Amino acid sequence: MAGEAFGSAGRLVVDVWSDVVCPFCYMGDTLLDQALEKFPHASGVEVRYHSFLLMPEVADGDAPVNPADHLAAKHGIPREQAVAMNEQVSARARQIGLEYRLDRAQAVSTRTAHQLSHFAAAHGKQREMIRRLFQAYFTEGLVVSDHEVLADLAAEVGLDRADALAALASGRYVAAVEADLRQARQYGISGVPFFVFAEKYAVSGAQPVEAFLQALDTSWNETVGSAAAGAAR
Amino acid sequence: MTSSNATAEPATAVRTPDEHIPEAAEAAPATPAFELLPVVGEAFGVCDLDGVCS
Image 1 (tube, rainbow over the protein chains, first blue to last red):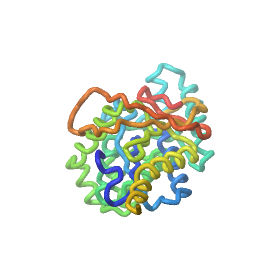
Image 2: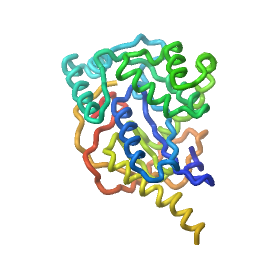
Image 3: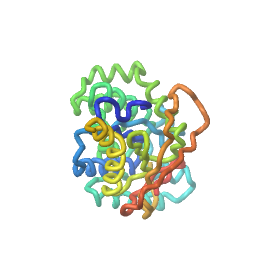
Image 4: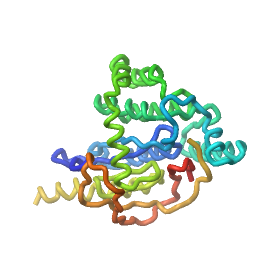
């Protein structure tokens, strides 16, 4: 992402690190979207998604597991406690109009889903793809590591199904995912969602619409807006 | 992925380093010089690598 945050095109770039199975990432993306609806320069904003693995210990071939079971096993807590924790997050999601069905969610490795995100980015459909992946995991209980499932989702957002399938099978975007993970480490990102505005300001976590609006305003005024004002002088 | 209580925390905005970090270089984690913006509203939460969302 280096060097492209606000180039000659006069656009403000928002780089987002997130994971498909991250509950606050879906919320954060929704809240950012709501902020953009209120932002007067939204047409000049480009949102780019970067890969982050919230469950790096889960391997590509591992069988799907319910997130409550995963949490209970990982932290040695009763399953009932894990379920209750998920319920609290689901209630938070409902406040902004999202339906989480974590009772039927199937947690898997998201490396392949991230490859699909990069495939979609190459075809100008990344934002739609990310939103579709969130819904598939949190609401529909789909296995978002299955190539056939992912190819179906790609087709639903207007991408070529066969091309998506071929990209996943060939590992065409493995390096792109690894580059994102590497950059996240270099930035010291240990939690997601993580939003970087114009390579200058970052917002950690899902924040209210007002917080995103403020970040958009500040970064716009200091970059694109400032450049436009300078050119006018 | 799963979760715990959503807590009310300040809306945090931080300033990242002005210098770009080469993507190809594997280096020690950078320590960004964070510049906090004023608190705006109630935070939703963040999910950490330990698998807990709060």
